[in-house]
Length: 236
Image (cartoon, rainbow, N blue to C red; front, top):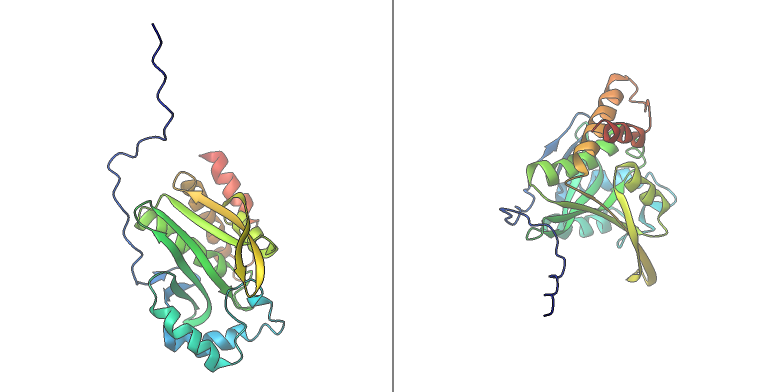
């Protein structure tokens, strides 16, 4: 008599799962910044903010740019702002657009969504507002919409983006070799993600870090964000 073969392993059940809503076109207000769906009317201010980068480094790893002038940037932004995926947002500080970031590769059926298309002007880089902007997007994905997985992808050579992903609480998942051709060059892509199980500690650490930044009149960083997230994970 033969013993029946064990069934092949499968992932855990997800009771009551239903597709997640798509991100709405509504503002995401915070203490240091507010994200709003990008509009053609943001073009002039965004172009001026981005033009403060005299090196052109903002655009090295982007699929678009650098843009020759304000009209060229406006010509890119108008259709980008009308799209549903990527869903581009402007990052406003004191009402002024200083950067953009998008929800993209949105997969409601699986509860997977990506933050990408991030361009931060020199005035926005390394500020609490920049951190808060991406935190607000993560909070919308997990808390408001119930997504299970939030992704971050970048050119594997883009060291600042890779550092930012780890700082924000994303986990490195590997390299997709020869993944894309961008601006005529081969791109290997670094993949990062966080899941709904990771999110509570990331949220608690980031909220604590932002509160510390708000308590400092100069908005200076009192401890590294990664340290605040690690402390929240240890306390969980």
